[in-house]
Image (cartoon, rainbow, N blue to C red; front, side):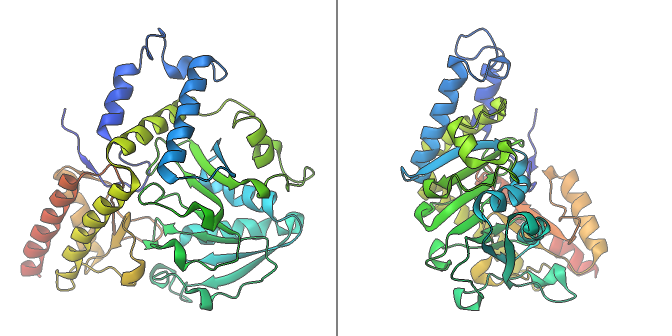
Length: 374
């Protein structure tokens, strides 16, 4: 079997080493005579998997002791509701909109604000009438209209669709309780966890299979949910007290995440991952810039994502041809999101340098042939 180069934005490529370990253990986990996905979530075997996964994650991200780690369900999208239900408590919250996902988070919070508290749009980079091209930057702290009494400030630190990333935690406003959707770049670099009140991330990018959602929450933010509004399954305090097991958790997804965490540690941790990811992204951006305009990425250079690189070609017809030919060459997932079109290459941790070099070679060869034709 030959594995293809998977540039999908999510569910995305996983480390081959983790997949092979899961394959070897699929029928018999550590001599137990059964698969981990067949075992009770309250049994000794899965408890070992869960505790090891939490410990490895804490080590990788250097999570302080006063933060709780939750493995939940419902995807990052469910956190668009869970966050205001848990943290707003009748007050107001600020939202910064820098792409499709932060906009969805703001809209969902606004939808339920009568029940939980006021939601404010503190800043947006969306160009009026041009949503596809408008999200090209992240606003500076002095460009945000922040309420000093806000319960929290919500940001998406890497927009999967538009390719806008907060590369440095220090760029975020000081003094605010920052809530961050880190779905598409968590574990790609070290993070100053203490700068955030809460971090959430869907698993299907850099963590593991879809179905599980990671939440890292500071202890003092627990216990604020209104029981008359917040379902118990969405209550962070209740989930913390029950070790993420108010109901049956995504046992196999947590197991796979644990294998990914072990792989990351063996590869040198997040400092090393950051170096590798910077090199991979630089190769693609260099190819775009050196194409003489054949490829175009609209995002401001300082905000360009290292995980998700969207770009366009001169015509939609050429983009369709690029996708078709890339698939015939053994590439997967390069078609851009349906809301914006174009092309998108996602370079998550598990994408090896060899895959990026193969993509760069194809991009250059395709541009050379089609530029001559046109």
